[in-house]
Length: 201
Image (cartoon, rainbow, N blue to C red; front, top):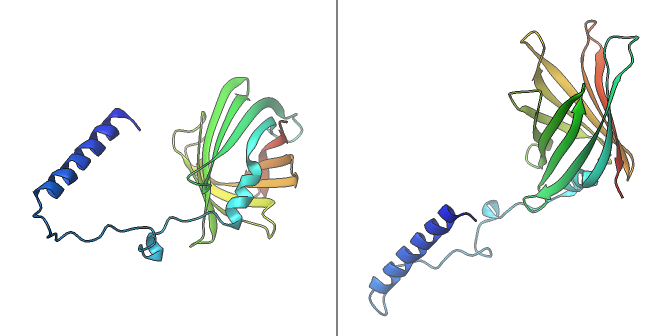
């Protein structure tokens, strides 16, 4: 908590104390304070569910190898990175920090991923060194949660937009892959990028 928040809390507490001191003895119009037990269900804080546990499979520190693909017949550009994933919001949100290189330049990405039980959809936001507007993610998973597929609208080099399809697969507990595809000139999916992860022990 920073200084401004502390000062605000102290001011509010002082005001409450002043009102309590000014109230006549034996008489009060104040209503009993609401407690967690008395709060209606819709006001209770949400709790992580099975799909949040699926997100938690990504927890920890991972060594990453990125392959960026160009025109057919050309070798991919390979780079290394480290990704650190932590939980926030009482387990409701996965925070991802990716640091490495891309095409010989420093590259950093930051993501927040969650799950909306009302919509029954995964959601998230992604920012990185190559974009100036965040990607808004939305998607689903297979029955096991080991394969998640999300999409987002992203920029193209000519100033337009296209649909990014991102698939995360967990072959084992300590390995996973991430692929990013876009529609190619022929309308078929073209894999722009593949990242292979290995959990750091």
